[in-house]
Image 1 (cartoon, rainbow, N blue to C red):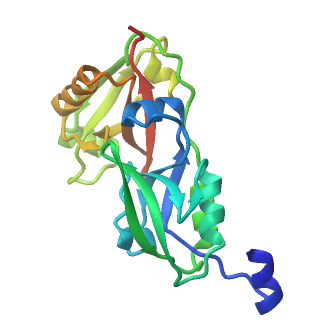
Image 2 (tube, rainbow, N blue to C red; image 1 turned 90 degrees about the vertical axis):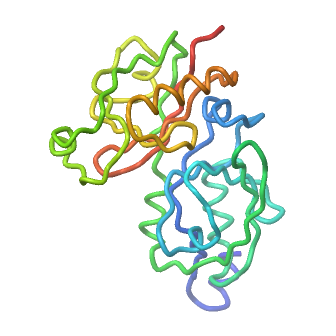
Length: 228
């Protein structure tokens, strides 16, 4: 434990994973086919970190560290921090509709302050379950990329308008957001977004999981479909 480390060494050397994580809300669980809420949703993975080397990907949901269940992002942060740098552990991860195990070698805490700030972020809005997503989309043309200060290589679809009475607005989607994936599938244009959303509806999902980029930061937002 951290107390034992402090008593032994006079300092604390936290384990470090290298992920930005969010809570798994009911809408997120519905979007990825998870039977119940709980776990930590990986929104971003820092390059050349323990998480990256282990093969963690955005969209993964970490449900356990070794034999310890992860119910919230704080659980994951605490369990990883309690590990010593260099320790080997197994992460249970929900990906593509099934659970898989990833072996990870825990990193050191040279970036722990940055990590703590990232892990405490939660841009997940509350969803109202309105009849439709309620967003207007536009392709990322060169002009749009320039207006949004995006690199030439950026792909996805930009949110051109948001109906304030629909579920996307309630979930926190804003005009200018760039949708870069839908239910963990990368999208390159408005057609891709619409197709992926339609596919999710046909598959019986209750909500759709969007990875959006806003002001250089990426975050997942779950938007519910209409109740049927």
